[in-house]
Length: 320
Ligand SMILES: [Zn+2]
Image (cartoon, rainbow, N blue to C red; front, top):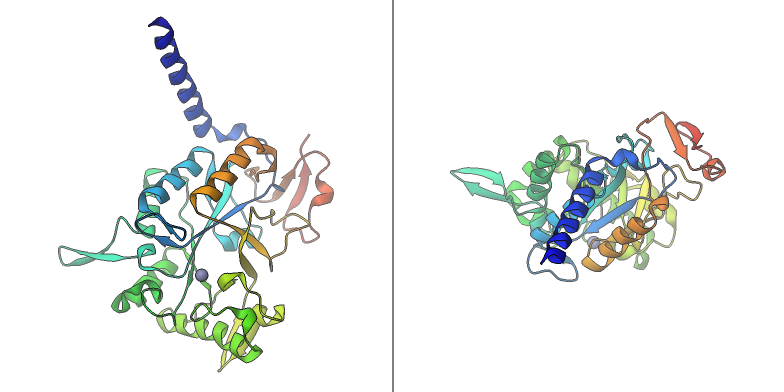
């Protein structure tokens, strides 16, 4: 009995220690050359499946990240090298592909349209309210010309309201082509129409809005990279500062010499891959990006200054 009680006591002590470490992330040494997880969600819905994360599991993902000192950062801030996080915390980026209904749904309540608390946006915003400092960023790679249910979240009368809400709240909308075209299979004019067409369609709802990144449908690059980077079709131009793949693991730090904005790897947010990477960084804390709390400096491990890329947005400091 005594042994059992002390085992309980030990478990409680460990739980308290884990909680304390979650609340005091400043104990992590800064390492701004560490890697960053860009998570890739598809459907938020039930039941859990290869391309579906349930609302409960999505909530649990956010909780796991929060407890380990991860904080949400906008993709565009990452590609600009402008990660402004408290010392000791680690950026994580959310991307949601294919504009399926469960990512952003309005429901009627007392005659008003409100955000469904069980959809992706609803879950994210409730979590952010309950965990000040976690952040609220996400990039939505939408499909304006897809068939239902993937056409712009599948509530046709509310599309303008949704896209304007996303932009007004600091979320990002990204290019995923008009209708999920596998770009490697098409000629230059078709590729350009797919990319410019998506831009044009989103501007019907959010005048003047410019995509800054492209997530390749099925990870398929067009025959020439330049077609994906910038161009125009039917009087609409497009320009992408970053191109995201569908897999590849954790991404390099934006400050790292091996950072390539045209080939950003992502981690598919399914149980197995998420678990692998969260555990990986638990076991290899030295490989994870940890902020120094000062956006004007890039703090790296001892001897790491040579691994910083040529284009520097801030002063480099080697940790002693
Ligand atoms: Zn997709």
